Length: 210
Figure (cartoon, rainbow, N blue to C red):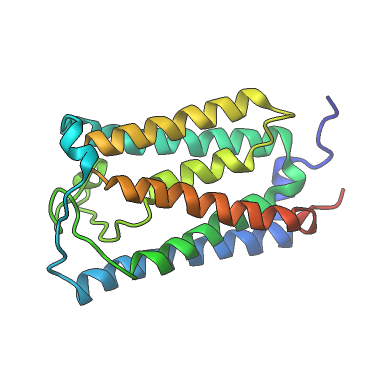
């Protein structure tokens, strides 16, 4: 296989890459702001029933597994980007950023209460008392699904399978630990599918020369 011409630090230092990273940071701040706005506007959000909560056991300890799974998916994406597709580095950062913009916009439309309590910190976030107020769509599933859809399964099937398994594990652990409603997981998958499917048309515009 032909090695990328760009070194990783050259790819990171290009203007397109830096601009895309800025978009990602701005999108993350926007999604966080929407989360805080939800709590301010709707502090008494209702907790609603979920069929899968009724059918499946509640395993709270799995809440501490969801973030490590997400981190593993992020590490997988970085491994894939820097080892196999450095020339499209801006596209990956930009794509993740746009999906976070979408999540921020959707999350505030019909906010529901967190299944474990509106002011409850979930999983690893309890260590720093971090609270996430937006439920739909699930950011964990959205990011794991974005990573899955971004990877070229024809050229790198091993990376694709690993990303798919991590996404599935994220969904299972979130449901069993009551981290999200089942509709939130579906929403995360759909948002990732729609946004990445749309952005793929413009992938080559993000290519780094050389």
